[in-house]
Length: 327
Image (cartoon, rainbow, N blue to C red):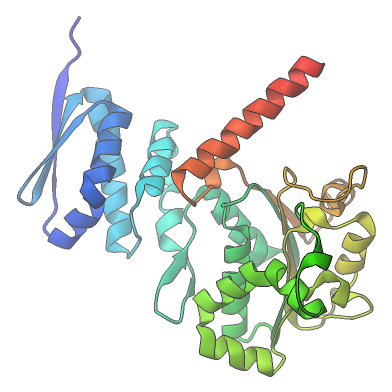
């Protein structure tokens, strides 16, 4: 029996919104046509969606949600199209509004920083409601950048008086001794992602001024020992490469009026063989303690190139199959 063919129309009066919706070389619309098996044609200020009834309705919903985001200043790319498509197919359309309404921070260039996935929304909410938050998930899920945005926003609102950023200087197959320069020169490459995020959020001039005044501190984890960190927003990045002792040392640095965010990817541990990750241990030891939040992000929350999501999923499937073969 032939499926019932249906058409829906969407009026778009703003030509710029139409161009943003279509994307480069119409890549966003082509992706929707592929995902739902529909045809989408533009005629002046009108979009016509045609295909079987169920697919047309879902594509119509996705397009309207994307347009809502565009009107709120949200950029549309293939990653966002794919993510909202997943939510609509899963019947989770009520949550999409959370991705457009919540502005976390505004950069020095006036760009609004917003959550792009529901996992990111949970992560940001956890930072708002807990003094210690663990963000555990794969590369590309925005763990570091969103924590930075929350720290900058807290500083602008005068909720804290300084920002402290740290990570363990653990090599991913390389040796620190072979790098030129003194200790600071050797550890700077490990802190580069933190510098880059701050430059993007605050601008080089503001960042440099705050660094010179000691309001922003970027340092290796070893520099935290023996300190009490009051009235600060502290971010520990790459926490999967902490030892059990280092993690305990860091967590007990928390002072009055401070927040700590600990980020890591437990699938990319670079510690010497046999050493237990402090992040893995902390997720077992500290669960259930009030005021400590744990958020686990997945490949669905990846906001880098769409291939990154596919790569993470492929590795997960490979290791899962390998474990099943062993057992």
